[in-house]
Image (cartoon, rainbow, N blue to C red; front, side, top):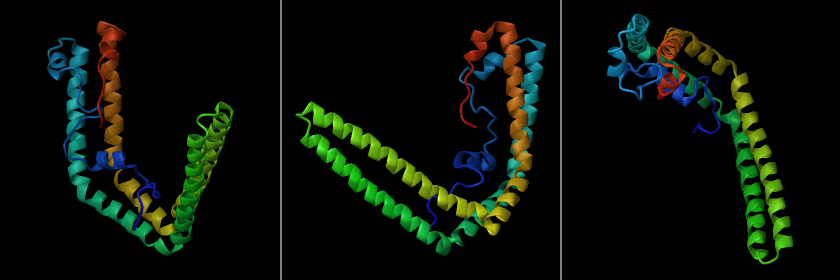
Length: 208
């Protein structure tokens, strides 16, 4: 089975959901300040910004709907390409599991020593230092093992082809998202000019 902790797709999970979402949400998600307060603003520049955002949101929603099935197929093709590498990845995954188990034993022994020495401040300090050192070594070993798995995936020709197709097919949605980011930046700029930086800073954005 393909492990989510071992595979870093061309798109991370949040980005993947963003590309495929058909909810039509804008970049920045829901304004934490009621949208009606902005739509009632009589500043012409702000009204133009809001209109631009609405139009670009519509384009994003249209592109997401049009590309939904294709992007789903592309993501499946990418997963299948990685799945086809199971035989090649098996030794690397086995090493990761072995290293994790070995280092967890070491860390567990460190914690046991700390419990035993808690009445001796000098020994306890030494135990804590040993635990910190072993934890750093554990992190480095696991990071190297996971990098070896990821490097093998990244170097695979079939994975590269599937990833490139996904990137190409998702380009319209990506461009829409970039445009909406620019739209919101422009709106923030005009709000700052009208009301001061404090008011605009209070406009926080949710997830895409």
